[in-house]
Image (cartoon, rainbow, N blue to C red):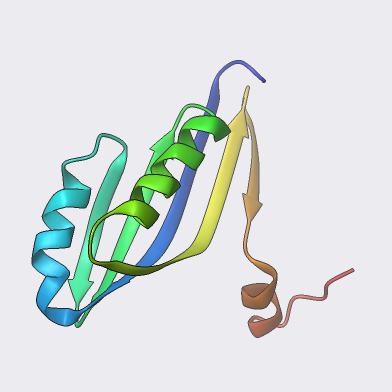
Length: 101
């Protein structure tokens, strides 16, 4: 594991529309998670962590939160010692017209 790691990921979290505000409050209470928008049962959430293991734990928290129906990862950026790498799921790359190898 590299020193000075930083990970940030974003997710779309689906809940029933009536559960959005309460689920948003629960997610907001977790250190490392932030809800940026909540509308009609869709929450836009980011996770920030110092290593991939902590990021995986935050992802698991989202998936295990009561009343969450699904969690879709959208974006992941990793930086270590000044170098940055971005990851976008393959289906999103295809939708954007990115050539896959």
